[in-house]
Image (cartoon, rainbow, N blue to C red; front, side, top):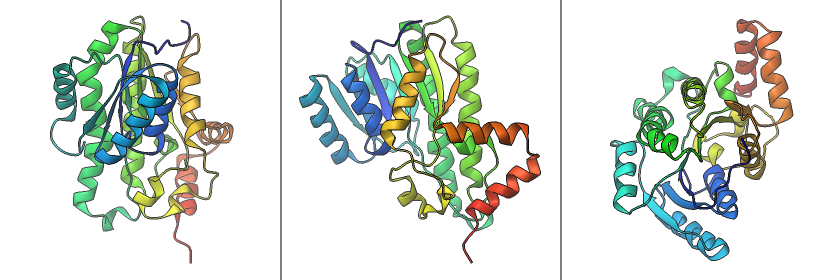
Length: 267
């Protein structure tokens, strides 16, 4: 395989109003891809779309949608078909987390978290993967997390949702081999976005260095450009080292206790 040529492609990006979604939009626009930007905040989407049209002379369509409701995969497939758009790449980036003991969590928020972080990822992937495989020249990127690699006390549900995303995406990588579609699970660590504003505390970062969206998206696109792209990639050398050490040198009990101490409330 050679590097991905995004010229003439149409990439659908969820969670595109800020953070990693907006950065994916900027970097893919710079590589020549037309875009379909999906999020709840239409004003932000419109502003980003105007910026990218002016800078790169590409087509950018905006879809205002709450991925926690309805059937987002079918809704997006129907919407893009109605507009005459042939989506060749998908970036499932939308997601959010809750912080705190699971037994104190708001059940409604937990259901919304599952809907966005799990159900929408699977639903959108299923709605588009067949046409992506047929096109055979694009990418399917599902954003997981370092939280996918171990249980996460005080972010128990979030870690579980990202473990799902990692497992699903790596399986799709194998299923899509030979089709030309490049599938990648992207696992960033703590990143400088609005994520912690939504969570409600920066303790969820565990005191680690915050990566920039530019670094995270660049890591994903570089991985996809490899001659033999991997099924998943962890962002940051230290994160990769820690994930490897946790698997090889520590017991399950030790890893869980260590993560619990990192996210524990300060005395």
